[in-house]
Amino acid sequence: MSTTNLAASVVVKGEGREVIKVALVGFGTVGRSVARILLTRFAGQFSVTQICNRNHEAKKVDWVPGEVEWTDSLNDVIESDAEVVFELMGGIDPAEQLVTRALRARKSVVTANKQLIARCGPELVRLAREHGVNLLYGASVAGGIPVLDGIQHGLSGDRIRKIEGILNGTCNLILSQMQATGASFEDALKEAQAKGFAEADPTEDVDGLDARAKLTILARAAFESDVLPTQLFANSIRTIEGVDFDYANDLGCTIRQISRAQLEGDHLYAGVQPTLVSKTSPLGLSVGGQNLVVTTGEFGGNTVFAGAGAGGDPTAVAVVSDLLWIARHQRRAEAAASNEAKKLKVSGDFKSAHYLRFKVQDRPGIIATLAQSLATHGINIDAVFQRPGYPKSALPFVITLEPCSAPVLTAAMDEIKQLDFHVCEPLDLPILG
Image 1 (cartoon, rainbow, N blue to C red):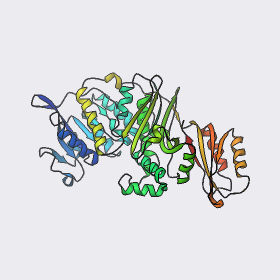
Image 2 (cartoon, helix red, strand yellow):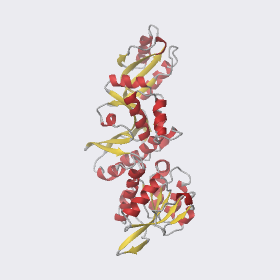
Image 3 (cartoon, rainbow, N blue to C red):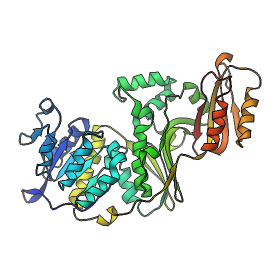
Image 4 (cartoon, rainbow, N blue to C red):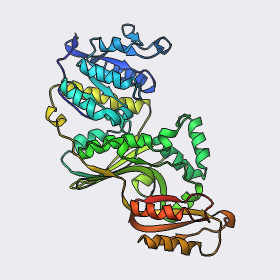
């Protein structure tokens, strides 16, 4: 969340109090929930003057007062006397155009658009500051969980060194379903799609792009950095199989899509990938569509934020909370908004213990060959696990490694993948903690 001074109030008087005029752009799941909250709980404080949506005639509902103007024109919103614009469309185009024009028209903007803020946030924050208005986006990460506000305000007295979290509820649902039922990735995904938790095209979620955008926003807030999403790696959960949960269980772990960022001096290590975590840790105990973020401060230690990371009502609560911030702090926080972003060296070169799962056409000497390849790169084996009952033609087994750097392991695995006994490509997952 980034804030600047609010422009001179464009309000109407209503029963002895100022009523701030707002316009909603986007009347989908979140937009409808925002409208309901404003029209029921805050009717005396805010006035919804416009709702903008494509094919708006089909979107009209009888619980929206008749005086609200419905439109499909962004120009109508920009040219209106609304003081605050809610951008609830999602995506980049035309959301970026709307937000840019609204800020230039000296209208504050509240958005839940993670992709827009991850990609264009710094430029839009500067534009808001130049025009004396607010750009708030507390709902862009973890839906209804106030993690951005917690980092920027509740933990502002600390120096945050590390963030670890589950930032995508769809992946968490799929992986916890695989853990609980033994379902394959494909079956767990189909079930999530059938229940409406996963999109028909799940790429953004399962390949880590959604979580990467959210991690980018968190890293900017926690480390006052200028990091971009393209600087962060994102690995898919598609390669996880049921056998991996069996072996993870043998290690006292489970598997989750983990977003993490760690600051060491002027170097930021950050990325998103499926990871082994302890079954008894907050991350391991998070199931279903939950989101969870753990921050580690230099002075305050660990702080956990958890709850519903998506859904119309939880996200709408975060959006309306940003609007309330605007109403309560119209002339404050200019200094906080002008902090200069730090230039950090960004990479995904974490030093971690690792889980390597191989599936091979069994023959003598395979483990010795792998051990020699790893030793050549200075990598120490921690343990070897082989469960009984699998066919020799596609035998899965696991090697765990002592902590090593990502580039060194990548070089070793590039060589190992060329060996002729693999049935499928080996799986490499970090082990957290």
